Amino acid sequence: MKSHFPFRALQVLLTGAIAAFAIAAQAQQVLRVSAIPDESPTELVRKFEPLAKYLESRLGMKVEWTPVTDYAAAVETLVNKKIDLAWFGGFTFVQSSVRSGGKTIPLVQREEDASFKSVFITSDAAIKSLADLKGKTLSFGSQSSTSGHLMPRSFLLAAKVDPDKDLKRVSFSGAHDATIAAVASGKVDAGALNISVWNKFVEDKKVDTAAVKVFFTTPAYYDYNWTVHADMPQALRDKITQAFLDLNPATPQGAEILKLQRAAKFIPTRVENYAGIKAAAENAGLLK
Image 1 (cartoon, rainbow, N blue to C red):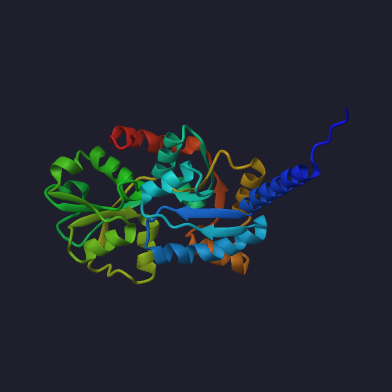
Image 2: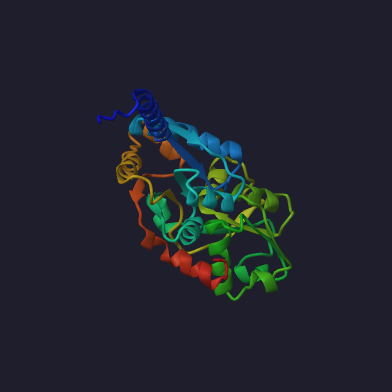
């Protein structure tokens, strides 16, 4: 006896499959991007908007900004694949790698990030070296910040200054610009932050360098990068990487994006570049 699969049932199955495929395809048409909140939310969005337009034109897909509340949230959203591309500091990249079991991949970094630095600033004329911080108050940025906490703490310890024992008080401002404000207003005696944010504030005359000065600049280390989850298709990873590498300061669009990103250009990066950051975090007891 000849049996036939009911035509109506087949039609329903096919319709459902096509709908599921369409939804999956549509989901792939949006690249969700976020960044550690190391500056004010308005500044992060201002830096992102021209980059988003450029990436949309290069990738052929919509690019959306996904704000996060703090550094830990930036790590968790990428590890849990709630975003696709994240701007991390070296330490937040290491945290994401540990949290995901090595499933996050750094694609590119600014040329400047291959030899990044932090600065210590103060408005107290008596503070001229790291040793002079003993008995004083100091603000770091976020607890998960590479250039605003981890590396400054590492260099303090190397100078035989234990922030938790030798300083009067240690606080966390949450962001580099907030650290500058805390020092300038006299809330703390000194602060540690990202050198590029400091230089930008000086360039834009947003800080009185007669009142607030740099008294120590750290040795260089690897820092920021753009990171993705390893589950992202290789073809899309390659497209994103190439889009960053192709940013050209000789074009109006490239010049605008690179200036906002405080970059001369972007270069490839790799997991091994952040081994020193990981070691510093382990030595300081900050990697859990």
